[in-house]
Image 1 (cartoon, helix red, strand yellow):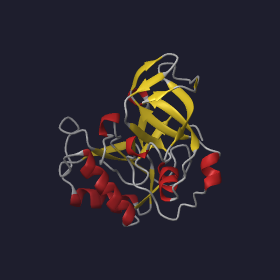
Image 2 (cartoon, one colour):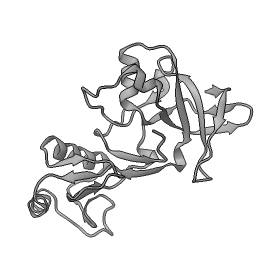
Image 3 (spheres, helix red, strand yellow):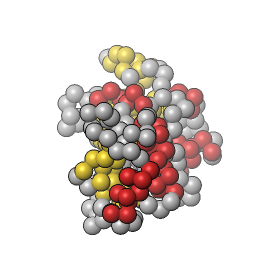
Image 4 (cartoon, helix red, strand yellow):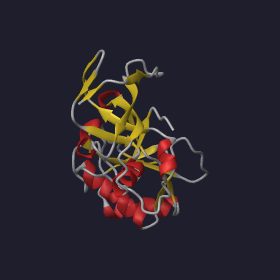
Length: 213
């Protein structure tokens, strides 16, 4: 993809390339790739989209008078807005930010624990054989302690388990910059290499910074 009209953004992380531009999302839908499921009845409107930034992670090939980037744009922020544009066939230019996907910061989106902590830990022990962290990088973190899981062998399985916990009202997503008195649960964070076409993780899997809205 070639982008001609853009503005470089100055970020706290000087190594992270970021550019603001405009893009017809509908016309480029085949190269824009989501990584999270969406929630129905999300109250998105065209006015919301027009006054916000959709953030896309890309691989820059070169930047000069024009930006050349790989024809794969991963949605970092704006999954619901993207779906609204597609569902309503809105063929217009929208404000977007392009970020170097290999230098973004990806954390697990926090969840509040909705049941008693001891009951939850017993559930973890009964459903997963826990093991030493030297043998696995897949974990569920409860407050400050990480529980490494043997019965889960991939990041996709781990996040499927997270979705199961959300569906069963055991945990509920909460923004990472929001305070709560409840116990916080998080998971092994995804990496940019987990973003692939067709690889869709549950709603509110990632907390990606920098944030622009």
